Image (cartoon, rainbow, N blue to C red):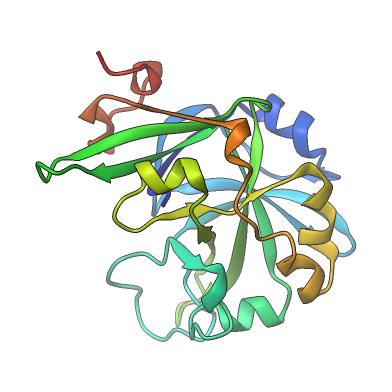
Length: 223
């Protein structure tokens, strides 16, 4: 699937998504992990805005302090069945996460988890479909958070995303508006595996496994 990804610089993200209001502030990163705050595009009062959301959704109904593994992703086929994500979906709380590429892991026959970097060959910055929610603690602390939506793997990702055979829902540019502003039916039509002809995947160093490591060498082809 997508456990880590590469974040483009803010200028490139704004040039791609043209938010009407930019509340966000961020720099390029090469090892974004769940529980970190990430930039996202969403709708508010009829216009698009760029905000920072915590990656790992906390549903609005959750009581107590969040614990356990972060809800970093949700299968597109199971959004309505998910207790954590159903409310956000029904309220059309959809968002787009700016991405320059992402990592996935292949379990080899030797039981070694080989990391791969995946990017698009026709776009240096692209959007991944997400869903967000707003949680308020008993002390009135507010956390706005999100999950990435996954779809079945395409031909390329079938080989490199073993054993889960999933991939993030990469949005075509023509689907940005319908994902953010469309009806649930229009939004769901955007959740399709991206054409593998416009993607590239190659092995990278296991240094990516350490969340504190963040440098351009992470996306170089492993020797």
